[in-house]
Image (cartoon, rainbow, N blue to C red; front, top):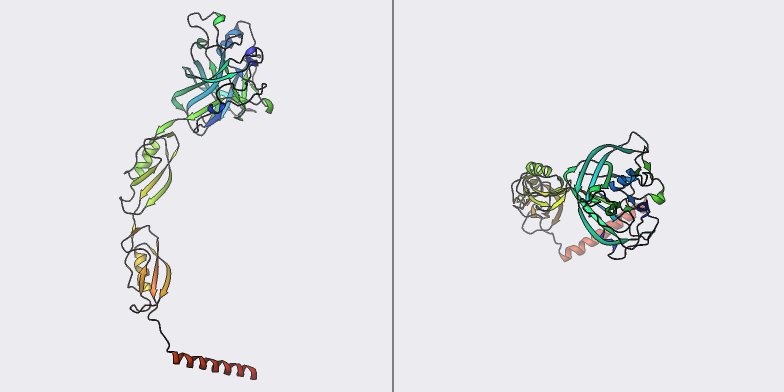
Length: 393
């Protein structure tokens, strides 16, 4: 019963910032940085069941937690946090990091949803690391309760988009295997809670159904846990045609992302020129790989010296279009003839590229100075005649 009273306290050594879920986690419910002594953690150990069976406690005093989850891909690795104590709530090391991990379906036929059928259950030895962080016991006021980080990689990724998970320490890992019935050697695993996950927690006391649901926002704490996707090595698909590259990515657990095309003519059309991320990196399954694909280019024709209509026909035949058209005077080219083009002849470009043209306006006509004076006078006279006629009307 004392185990249920354990609470999270402010760390007294290494900063909590080190205890995070990896960036690629699908579910992240990290331990909180807090000195709130009202935050609870749940006893969650088969040792508790043995004590209950001996009449020492009741399941109502010692429920175990099932936390729900929703993830976008198969689960490959689990990380969770907890403390280890003896039955007097003194710090203690378990003799082996042995756990039972159980995944349940989510039964949505009832309200609220409840844990359904068992999908997978495994008894495993896990990786255990002392985080260097300590907890406070409000009963004994001991600043000596360590926090541990546990992790386990599933032998085969579990494809369960939503469900419930239960993590319980095994009795065999809580007592001395050479003296398994000695209660003085009992070691209990107690799971740490997290207020950051915003998931739905169920508690089961071994007797009551349905599970007790925590709905009080002030006490809505979840199991401090991370669910990680499988990491796969990105294959090298450069040099493959698009269909083969797509198949290779799918076989490795990846999907095609953004596709851009290269019209330089450096590789046969349809061949993969580049990929991002690069081959050899390990990424979560389902990650997107962006591709650069060689495409059949359009070769720009030489339209200098052609008429605008001829240039338009040549560009259209090459899969290109006329862009902007401007005109300049030329002493050598007749009016309407193409003097310049914006893309050099022979260039490999994307189909549909616009080529701007500069056309000749022909020779610029100049008016002699005397003629210009006469023209101005004539214009003025004509303007006067027009004005006089307008007045008579």
